[in-house]
Length: 214
Image 1 (cartoon, one colour):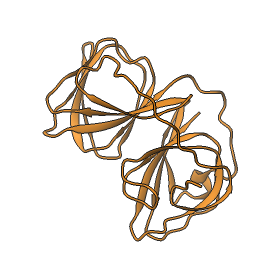
Image 2 (cartoon, helix red, strand yellow):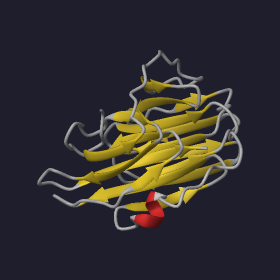
Image 3 (cartoon, helix red, strand yellow):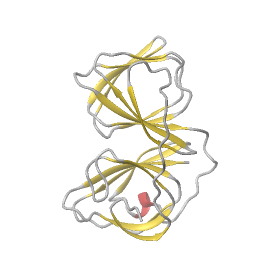
Image 4 (cartoon, helix red, strand yellow):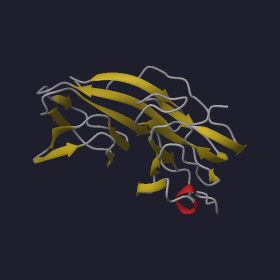
């Protein structure tokens, strides 16, 4: 059993998914590291070097969730519009499919962005459960944002804390923000349906982000 921390599992496993090679989509500068590839989503980490424009001539055909793995500042130019984006490690942003654009890291150090590319539209109305973690355990599970495609949960456990029994129905991409039992900072895993209670067995806080795929 591959639990995120220490789990009392009632139903459903967590699953690791194999990785396949992903080519950059017209991004001239970033280094692209494939992390996961499933029927629903493709996950990469893009590393942008300072002051090196990344030009996406053909735009980006898919909707994405972006999770910033470093503090930094970047600009994004699309057509006549230009935006300055400041972020901290662990910030999450929704990025819909777009036309041609140029992104540039204007920080003085490389920045890494974990990108979750959605391969298709939602499967339909998302199923519900009375044991939804954000409802039965709001101390540890908080909704960062939600739309028709995804729900993003921020998960935080203090040292030696135990949570309430809850149920996951949707597949989700889980990103670890620090070292935890059975996981390292920046690990990425795919998890499936499960009903369990979790406990942080370590003496350090545990933080992660779960992106539920509808």
